[in-house]
Amino acid sequence: MVRRTSALPGLLWLPAVVGAVLLTLPVLSLLVEADLPAVPELLSSPTTREALLLSVQTATAATGLCLVCGIPLGVLMARGRARLLPWVRPLVLLPLVLPPVVAGVALLAAFGRMGLVGQPLHALGVQITFTSLAVVLAQAFVAMPFMVLSVESAVASLDREYEEAAATMGAGPLATLWWVVLPLVRPGLLAGTVLCFARCLGEFGATLAFAGSAAGTTRTAPVEVYLLQQSDPQAAAALAVVMIAVALIVVGLVYGPGRRLFSVRR
Image 1 (cartoon, rainbow, N blue to C red):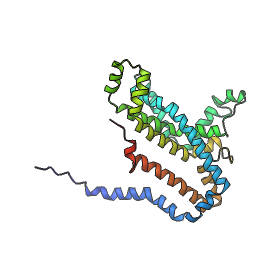
Image 2: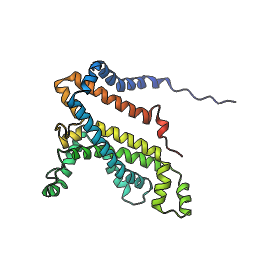
Image 3: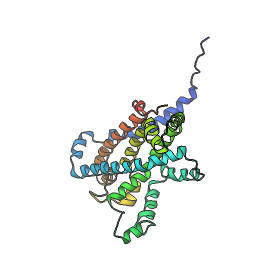
Image 4: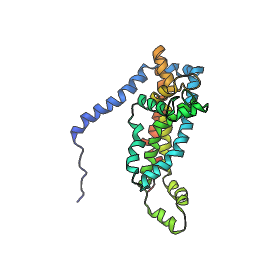
């Protein structure tokens, strides 16, 4: 006898449709409001090009920092046995839920002129705030948890038999990590990298509070959208559409039709 799959409750449709409308209506409204024919002209503006180029450059650097630091953090969260790790994990993931302005204030407390680390650096003639380096740090601060979560999830779901087999063949912990674990979780690493880069491109609040909005130095594309909104709302909407298009591509790759490319091998 063939067992039929139970149908979904009809009551799910109403709240589901309301949720879908709530999530998609603002984006569709922006597409309607934006002057789409003006997008090419807007992109040809030196100010806009400068902001977009700075966003790409800083996001690339911040994503590299997330890779260097986030991968080890994710592996330790998944495989580490230290008693402090359960207490460290919430702190590592805290930027995911921090209000953007609070993140900027926290960065100022750490790296500002009178900050915990910034004060001795300033005494040595090193300034971080209101520089492109500040933008990179702000982007990495809010984006690194995505890398940590992606790596932790991928490594935690990996069967340990592969690592045990490598150990029986004489491979040390570092060789096992490099030649066995990381290649097996490569889809998770790619997904984390793409998400980090997208989050860095879209970072605004912490950047504005920590780095400011100096043209050519700290004025990224999201900051440019914010400034345009005050003087030219249609131009702001057009630039926002460009950023939404980039974000949509990223989300489609990781969670949409292209997600098979980033599925973790088991």
